[in-house]
View 1 (spheres, rainbow, N blue to C red):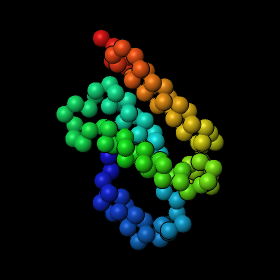
View 2: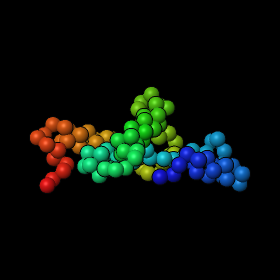
View 3: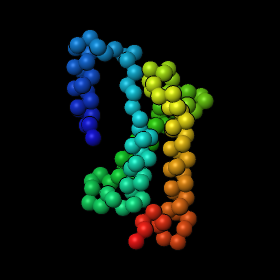
Length: 117
């Protein structure tokens, strides 16, 4: 995981080289990581890790909501330069559906069905 100080150093280097401006979009995919963090949490794979995956999940998902809050129609990305993948919005929707169904299975069955023994 890249730390905030590392990101600042990268941005500073890009600005110094003339390859960065405020208009340069920073493409990132927080929900990809938030969704993975959810799976790590539900399957108990973050035992002994600090901070726990649930904390990262919250941070990544808050980042996703911040991206979406820029638009009144709920989309994540603006110009295609922010994310060049043709199905970018569909991918986010699909991942949200997967996360919902994963939580439904984990919370509404006898025991956690995500942990088969």
